[in-house]
Image 1 (cartoon, rainbow, N blue to C red):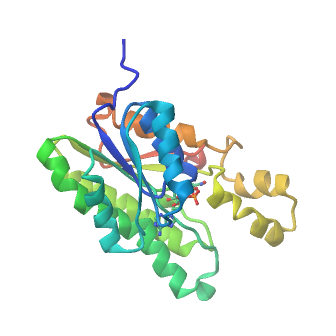
Image 2: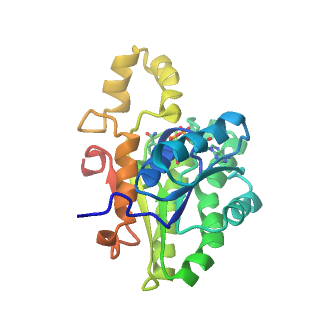
Length: 261
Ligand code: NAD
């Protein structure tokens, strides 16, 4: 019978995990028996409470480490403060929507730093330990926008395509050492990041909430259903299973058919 805690003895760091997809993935990692290290840039009581709740619900060790993923040193310090990790999930991400001519330079820099460069820095810090132990999983949360583009999302699309490229290079550098690197490419998942885009889209298109969700946001998602954070967590757990030992340097789309169009 398969173990219900296949990841016991493994420590997973999930960046940007005090909400949305990151929290969902952390919960599925914990359900599978992994110790989890949650992260975001804030250091509030409620952030630490999330880790306590996961520990109580799943009977695993769980902690919260505040670190700003826009800061290269903080990215590396996160891995050190966690004591290294067997599973690294680079999930922290932000979005900004504007025409290229109007795209604020600061937003471009922040998106590239948080959505792309942080994955480089955390991977660099985590790989030596993974190599020493002969086992590791790097899972980068890219996007359908890592494989295809949309207007007005220049920085996000560039960063996510970069994440896919970084994933391939990481996989090649560690091939044959028991370490894999893959990117999960979600389509639309209803999280705070997506929720925050709805009012703008309603204004831009002059539509009500339901219509903007169906006609605009899920326009390119043939299933017309949002993916769930549990489905993304389940995909991440699968990538940590022995069945996925030879899956490396690739992308897995969880996008309701978006990239098949
Ligand atoms: P979210 O806003 O709910 O979560 C983003 C997380 O990143 C939060 O925990 C936030 O605190 C954290 N974060 C932001 N800036 C940070 C910083 N400087 N340092 C550390 N943490 C920081 O959004 P989400 O939808 O859960 O997005 C998670 C990831 O999934 C992102 O990389 C996003 O691009 C990607 N993604 C989301 C969707 C979607 O439809 N929601 C689709 C494709 C990809």
